[in-house]
Structures are given as C-alpha cells and as structure tokens.
Length: 214
Image (cartoon, rainbow, N blue to C red; front, side, top):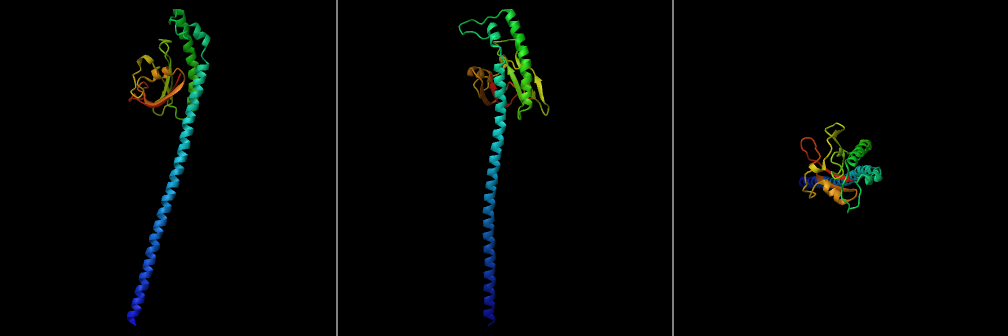
C-alpha cells in the first residue's frame, strides 16, 4: 500500500512539475513573441514619425530656397542689365565702358544689400539653415562678388568674405566646381549632396550640402 501511495504521489508531483514547466515555457514563448511584435510595431511607428519629420524638415528648406530664388530673379532690373551689357545676344561681344562697369557695380552692391536682408529673414525662420550665399559671376563683375553668411559653433549667421567663383576648387563628386555645374544648368536647380571645399567651415574647410543656384 505504501509503495502505491508513493508512486501516486510521485506521479502527481511529476505531472504538476511538468504542467508548471510547460505553462512557464509557453508563457515565455508568448511573451517573447508579443514583445517582438510590440518592438516591431514601435520601430515602425518611430520610422514613420521620423520620415514625416524629415519630410517636413527638407520641405521647409526647399520652400525657403525657392522663395528666395524666385524673388532674387524677379528683383533683377532686366532693362538696366541690358543697357549695361550684361544681357546681350550671344553673337555680340562682351564690352562695357568704364561708366557701365561703375554703374553695374553700384547696382549690384545695392541689389545685394537688399537681397541679403531677405536671405537673413528667411534663414532665421527656417530650421536647419547653417549658411547662405549669393555668388556673382566674374563675367558680370570683377569687383562685386555677392555675400556669404555662415554659422560657426552656437553663434548666429556671421558675415564671411564673399565667395569668388574664380578661386573655387573642382569637386570630384561633381566633376567640377559647384559654380560651373550650376551655371551649366542655365536655370535655378538643385545640386548635391556633395563635399564643398569652397565653404569655409571652421578648420575643416569642408561641408556636406545641397544648393539652389541662379
């Protein structure tokens, strides 16, 4: 009788242990699967949110650049530029009298002063802007080069020496300088991203960026 009782007790204990182990293992598998599903769903939500943030971020920059580009073109005095030999038929030679050169430089200087105020206002209200510049073709003026502003550290946008297109170094990512590629477009357009050695970023003299050029 004692042997039978011990056998029944042992079997009962084994059944209980087996049930407990089975339930524990099944619970761990269920919890792990649910945790994985929750992690995947969470990552997907984070990715979707990040995508929307990045889309809004880049869209804001693009809108600001397009606003500036359109105003910069519209504000040019086409009649004045024609009279001073900037806009001319291709077959005509490029010649300007000393009076035309002086008048053009004065016009460009005043034009850039007004345009820089617009650039500054737009840049201050656009997230992610670390620099802005307006580069004048050396074929138009050898005295006026435009303007160039850049953030350094935690400071605001600080005035820098204007970019001189004649001193730019070719970029291997573009097969030339960003200026040459922009001019070849013949219209406002996007470039980049690329390593721009012409923009003086701290001590590195290199930065990544894209641009919208006239």
